[in-house]
Length: 151
Image (cartoon, rainbow, N blue to C red; front, side):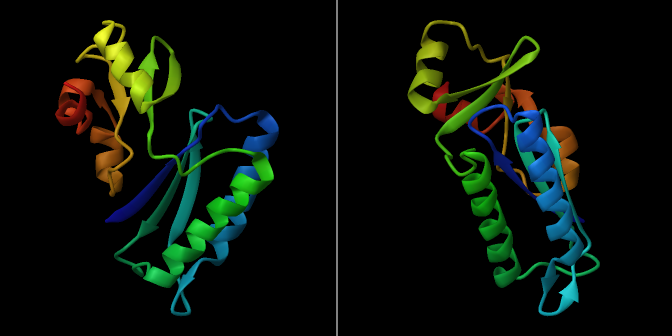
């Protein structure tokens, strides 16, 4: 099974940001190891907003130290690009063809105003496996963990 971590940017990446991020991710995943064992890892940027790291647990599972190294890399990317990748109080949702990211209190205000409904697509960045990425990442608000908090 592929284990994943999703990091959401506070703004859309520029072309220069994306090039830098993808270059750093490619170098990192090619050399990423756990206790000296190479990890079967890859990474991608989706919608110029999300960085997704993936590791195939069946080949070699990541360890605490190897996960810490990935977090260090993401912190480095933040410094070099000015992106904020660790603000978990920002919520991403689809507004027509665009992806919007707003603070929690603004998200609550938009629900109260009827601008976000139970059918609005939200991004569940808490998922941890590749199968979930394909089926439970972009879901209607009513089907996500967000419903328990906001509806």
